[in-house]
Image (cartoon, rainbow, N blue to C red; front, top):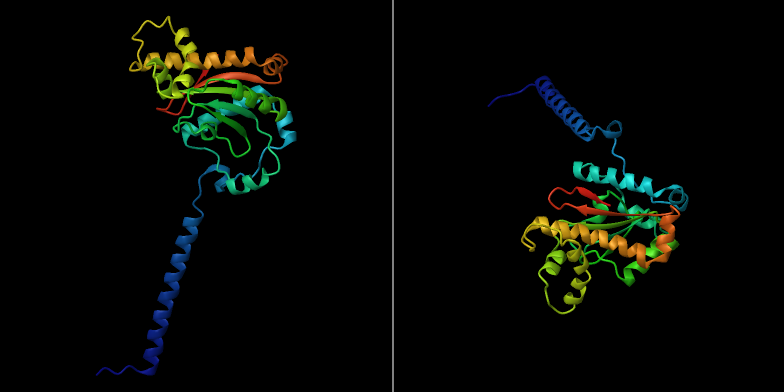
Amino acid sequence: MIYISTMSKKIFQSIILLSVVISLHSCSQGIEKQTNEQPPENNGEITLIKHVMTKEEQDKLTADEVLIEFKEGNQRFNNGTTTIRDHSQQVRKSALGQYPKAVVLSCLDSRVPVEDVFDQGIGDIFVARIAGNFVNEDLLGSIEYACKIAGVKLVVIMGHEHCGAIKGAIDNVQMGNITGMLAKIKPAIAMSDQFTGEKTSKNEVYVKTVSQNNIRHAMSQIRTKSVLLQEMEQKGQIKITGMFYRLADGKLEFIE
């Protein structure tokens, strides 16, 4: 049996206590270092956006400024540097009023996340969706409300790559109410008569041509069928533009 003196016990206990203290100190330094390792933006701090658009901010904006902001937002979307937002706070702050910058008429397609494509938050844009992003009376009324009543500055018609509605119209699909819906896209097919390649839904170049002409047709419909929007555009109060969204890389092509 080994006997340890009282003095030896105290020394032994002190050594153990010192080891524990050193270990705890090392762990705390590691945790502190890990916690402080933030992305380089904003001097190492992450900015969480809680702000929502106000009436005063909306009034100061021009259509061209909103368009530039959309282009820059799409670049952030493609670079993976989209704005970090506190959606919970934005929901609460926008509950009593909304002052969006733009209205976007998009296709129904689930692969087109409209707010994300432009790096916009809650309360920033109106989004109208319909398969084939064409214009009818109800959508015209919605766009008129967005511009004349709610004060938006930019109207965007956004089609996209590999659109099923465009392919259905090309294939002359006959099925329930889909038949009547696809008939609204047929003018874009007629506009694509000069296409020299294979005019089938399997030819993605042709599908893209029809899709882009469908965007142009929708823009024309807005200008010819809505006196309100036509006058607002002529006075420079709004801008109407078209965009083609590429599913493969998330980039936009601008249609005039």
